[in-house]
Length: 244
Image (cartoon, rainbow, N blue to C red; front, side, top):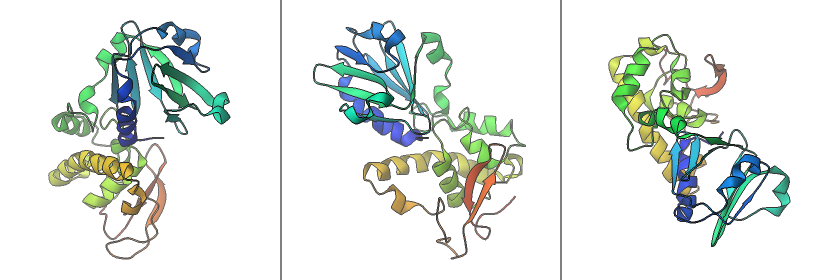
């Protein structure tokens, strides 16, 4: 599942169509969305792993799920997986193998925009308050909780915990205050590093724990284990990541 940084990069790619009129609509999701033909795309917004295409009378939510993708040119070989294609005078945007649906303005109004780790509205104090209210949650689950850290996925989770030296099965309530603050800060810091490296196509070169074999600090084996309530795979070093 794409994490927040690639979604922000996608928004940057699509931004050139903001303010343009839709001249055609394609894809298997057009039954209810075809009404936007002839309408102007007013704005593109992202929240965590979600993208919203804002029109005057409709809002479209795009979620790429596990294997979704997008392109700025139609891929004829994958027409059968095209969920939505919006064409404009000077090009188009095409979304494949993803979830597409209309959402009403109220849906957007109730989203906690302050929970998006890459947003200018990000509120670390609110994240800390939510974490303290979930003191029995493992940190591996807390980082993946989209109500607390919208946009954080498994790569960011693993790399953040390695950066701050915390074992993924540590309970939130057992974290020293300095480590709790470090986790909140690094969730945002790493997300922007992720975006920078992804854009430069060097992300994989910067992994320190995720799918690595040896710890870059001590040289010991990186442990691979399903952790937390969500049973998502964690990669960690027993020597350099403390279980509190």
